Each structure stands twice: as structure tokens, then as C-alpha cells.
Image (cartoon, rainbow, N blue to C red; front, side, top):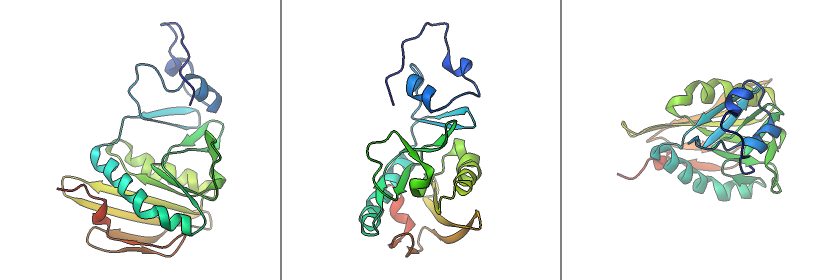
Length: 201
């Protein structure tokens, strides 16, 4: 996104654009100065901000990206880290990982129809968004797959669930906990123990 505009101290984009955020405003004003946010997402004009992930999720994301990368490419898709997945001018999310049908070609905003599978690592502060709101948005947009990962660092537990779009709704396709095998043949071939996503001790 573009460098934030220099505005007067009295001007607060969070207040001025409450409920009215869109991609044009995002390009002009995000990231917000003096706001320590890592992720900016928007649903229906309402902007949400999140700090950097905890180390447990950050490690899991890095590890899963490595596990998936070659398999995604072999299936003819393109793997990405975070992208701006756009549903409408006033709605976008930033999945932790994303599998695209083809290269984004340097685009800032990636249309949802180009996404095969977003990957979300659930954060303590965004459980509802990651488990309910974002999957619902993706399902309505016709995104065929949705992968959710939940890491409990204190218990050294991890859960991976892949949902498939069926008749406009996501249904469970494959699920595995640490110590089990997560095996899929669609949308690409993958086989691993979710425990591999846990930080080393």
C-alpha cells in the first residue's frame, strides 16, 4: 500500500471514515501513522486492525508455507504469503497464506475469484472473524477451499481443518490434530503431521 498521507493532527481517518472504508481510502491512508497494526481488513466499510501474530502462529505460517509450496506449484497454482483478497470495494481480508489460480502480477488487490484457497491461522483476538465471518465471506464469493489452523502454544497442540465449498457452504473435507496425518489430494497433494507446525522446544 502507499505511504500514509501527511494530514493535520486534528484529522483522524479512523473517525472520519468510520464505516466508509474502501480500497481507495486504504491506498491513501494505510498504514496509519503511529498505529502499530500489522493487518488491515475491512468488512462492509468497517476497518479492523490486528497487531503482529504471536510467535507460535508466525512459525506455523512459515512452516506450512514451506510444506505447501512445491505441492501448490506442481498442481498448477501459485502460492503466496499475505495478499489483499478483495470481495468488493469496501470488503477485503488478508489471509495468512493464499493459493491463487494464477500469478497476481504485482496487483495490490487480488479479486476473490482468483483465490483457490485462503489459509487462516486463528488468533486469540479474531476467533469469530477467522472461524465465522471470513469463511462466510469466502463461501459467498465462491472460493472453493478454506484452510484453518489453530495453534495452542501452551498445550503444544495444533488443529488443521480444510473445508470444501458445496452448494454455497463450506463442509469439512479433512481435519487432523497433532500426532495425526493431514492428507489431501485436492486442491493439491499434501501429507504431514500438524505437529510439524509447532515451534521447536
